[in-house]
Image 1 (cartoon, one colour):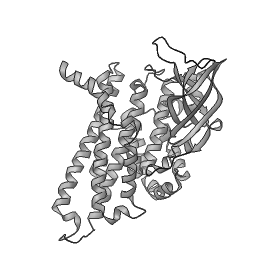
Image 2 (tube, helix red, strand yellow):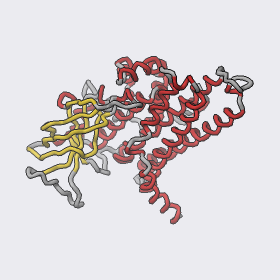
Image 3 (cartoon, helix red, strand yellow):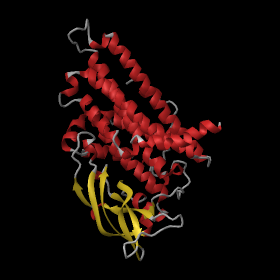
Image 4 (cartoon, one colour):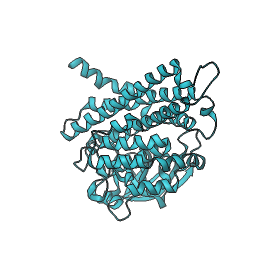
Amino acid sequence: MTETLSHRTADTSGDGARYIAAARGLAPLINAEADGMEADRAISKPVIDALAETGIFWMLVPSEWGGGGLGIVDSLKVIEELSRSDGSTGWAVMANAFSMAVAAGYLPDSGAREIFAGPDKGITAGMILPTGKGVRVEGGYRVNGVYGFASGSGHASWIGAGFVVQGDDGTPEVGADGQPVCRVAFVPRSEVEFRGGWNVMGMVATGSEDYAVTDVFVPEHRTMDTFSTVPVRDESVYKLGLLGIGVGGHAPVALGIAQRALEEIAAITAVKTRPGYRSVIGDSEMFRREFVTHEASLQAARCYVYDAHATAEAAAAAGALNDEHRARLRQVTTWVQGVAQDVVTFAYGWGGSASIRNPSVLGRCMRDIAVGARHLLVEPMTLVEAAGPILTGYTTS
C-alpha cells in the first residue's frame, strides 16, 4: 500500500474512517471479480452482497434510518477506494449512494422513510433530469418517460424518473419563477421496464441501462422538486444542493482509476525489460522523470478535490455556501478528469504488451477513464460555466 493511500485518510476518524477502511478491505474481492464483472457487464453478486454488508451503499443516508450519516468528503474517499479496485464498481456505488443522498435530503420525510427506514433499506439509481412527463392526479402523478444511463440499476430497488408536470392538454405547468414545474419520482423496480442499451467500451459493469416508466402512479410523497435548493433535513451534506451532491462523486472515481494505473505501472516496470534499456524499465531515467511528474499531478489534483469539497461542506454547515463554492466544485470535478486521463495514458503507454493483452488492469483503467471523462456533468463547458463566479472572486478580492 502506498504512502498516499494511508496518509490521505489521516484526518478522518470515527464512522468515516470505518467506511473508508471497509472499502479498502473489499479490494481483494473486487480485484478477483473485476475481469468477470467486465465480461458479464454487471457488478457480481458477491461484490453487491459485500457492499451491502458493510453498509457502504447507505453511507450518505441519515444514521437515524440505519445509514452511515457521512459527510461529503468521507464519502468521496470511500468511492476513491472502490474505484482504485475497479472503476465500474466505484462508479456504480457512487451513482447509488449519491442518488440516495439526494432522495434522503430532498424527498418529503414520509417518502424517504418509505425507501430507507424499513428493515430492507432501498437502493436508488436512475435519471433525475426531467426527460419524462407527469400529469397531476389525486394524491400524486401519472408518470411516463424513457430514460438512459441508469448506472447501478442492476441491484437497485428504486429507480429515479425525472419529469415535467403537464396538464391534461399536454401544456407544461409553469411555476412562480416562470419556468416549467419539474419533479423527480422514485418508482419501485417492479414498475420499471429495463431495455438494455449499455454496449460500451469502458465502465461496462456499471449496468447503465436504458429504461422506461409507463403510466405509473407515483404518490406525492415519493416525488421532489428537481431544482430545489432547500433540503428537508439539516445535515450539511444535503445543503450542498442536488448539483453539489450529484457532480462531486465523479471526481474520486477518476482519482481511484488513476491511482491504480500508477500502482500497476510501478509493479510492471520493476521487472519488465525492453530492448535498448540497460536494466528494467523502472530504472530508466526517462520513465522515472515521467512517473514522478504524473504522480505529482495526481497528488495535487487529489488535494484540490478534497479541499474544495471540505471548504464547501463547512460553508454549507455555516449557512454561507455561495456561488464560488459551487463553481469550484464544478471546476475541480471536471478538471480532475483530464489529470486522471493523462496519468492513465502515461501508465498505459509504458505498459507495452501488459496494457493490451486481455485481461489487463491497465487496459481496463484506460477504457474506464475514457468513458468516465465523457459524462455530461464533466464535459468541458462546465469549466466555462464555473469561470464566472471564480473570476468574480478575483476581481472583487
